[in-house]
Image (cartoon, rainbow, N blue to C red):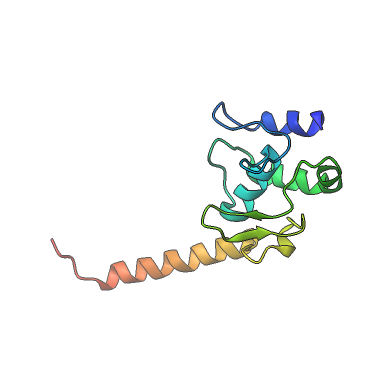
Length: 124
């Protein structure tokens, strides 16, 4: 447990709760990294290297479950489910898009936005 927590703590700032196990009212630090990745896929909320820490936690999944460091179910702040039955790998997450899919989507939206900007008359 100490190795996992030490690794995660090195990738947080001072405002993040450092619980090793979830409670009824608070997420564990492993939960927070997993939630951040599955929900946002970027660093934020005092967590850095989110993708790398998510991959690290995937490699430690059995240990996390055995030590009770991960919530059985995870969801975002709006209540949207992110994982069930400790299956927090992206394959089990319906909200997950691969990094490639996200970059392709961003590229398409950027092109569409550029086209709209060209076709919209200047209103100044």
